[in-house]
Length: 460
Ligand code: UD1
Ligand code: CA
Image 1 (cartoon, rainbow, N blue to C red):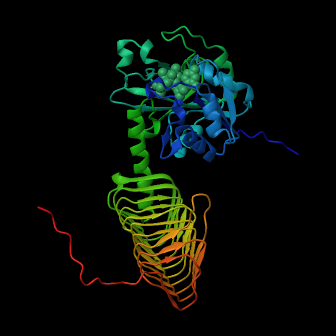
Image 2 (image 1 turned 180 degrees about the vertical axis):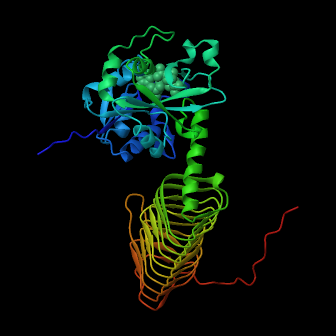
Image 3 (image 1 turned 60 degrees about the vertical axis):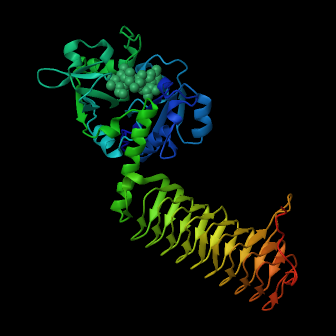
């Protein structure tokens, strides 16, 4: 049998830099974009390329990086001292298969697209290496791409080492490159740090490749965002907006109507049905599922929620870790807290807080109520100002309300307590014992009128 050796891809992500300009105790690569550390973005992009192995070179704040991302299936390589990008790559080389193609990525360049990387990788073989470049109107600070008379890439010169003529070049090195491990290995061993910064520059391998009669194939991208690195909080904010625009565009392509894509934030993932619409200032976190024809009003925050078809979430509502049944109407100004499950066609109105409760089909809690640790049946009507007194200062207790019950306004249900099916509770009651089905129960002092009473008058 013939065994063919398959050329596989290995990815080295450089993430050891400190990120001084972030002015933060957190290592740079842990700062978040769309609620996820920028390094995690790069790792998931790398994972989409189905690489044989992903190596992450870390240094600064290694403990924090491990704590947050240690569970990811990558090879963590420490670079205790940051002696340059070439030195960083070198740290990962012992774990790399010699016959594989190495793709170099950066932990602080989070929005690189897999399509571009696949294009870059496709340029690599035994005689060719790939380099991702772009043209910038202000190339200040970047390594410049020097091309020969035939417009072939001949070397990279770092800004700090460049002459005035070289500094006038606007084609820059994004840093992202792909090359066979065998070649990379040889060249890294020949690096020195005889340059202005006293660093081992990865970029010096370009000249070595040309010297060894290889061709450096430049893939030129015109998408600034995908090759932009993040060094400070200004760039972090710019990239956050770019990322949110990308996500909004994806949702709109899937059919979501948005009042203003620039006032939308998704910090996680979102599945949407048909004809979903969102007003301004909607913030989604974690995993959010929206059924067909769901409408989300302005200033709504949703965290890990599943919302059924035809639900309306009205303005200024906050929903966390909850399930909302089809046809329900929530808000305006509703707060639905974790472990709440609403069945179909439930109504939850303004200034209503619900925590760890189930609400049956067609039940209504329309105004100013607190419902905690409750099981509410179907077609129940909870009057304005109803409170479940679920907590005695030490323990939590359950309130159970049967189907078709009617709770009068301003009722306190002191748990543990059960209200029977079809029961009616008179307004203003404090219910401390279970109430029977169907009957009217109320606790209220008798109303009296004092005939001879007079309002006090001011004394002169
Ligand atoms: C580098 C390139 C430059 C390119 C620019 C693109 C070199 C010598 N220069 O310059 O041509 O235009 O990126 O942004 O490669 N890192 C380590 N360990 C180190 C040094 C760096 O992990 O010892 C990581 C950093 O965390 C960072 C990346 O490598 O993610 C780039 O390092 P940085 O020092 O920012 O390189 P630049 O000077 O920007
Ligand atoms: Ca940089």
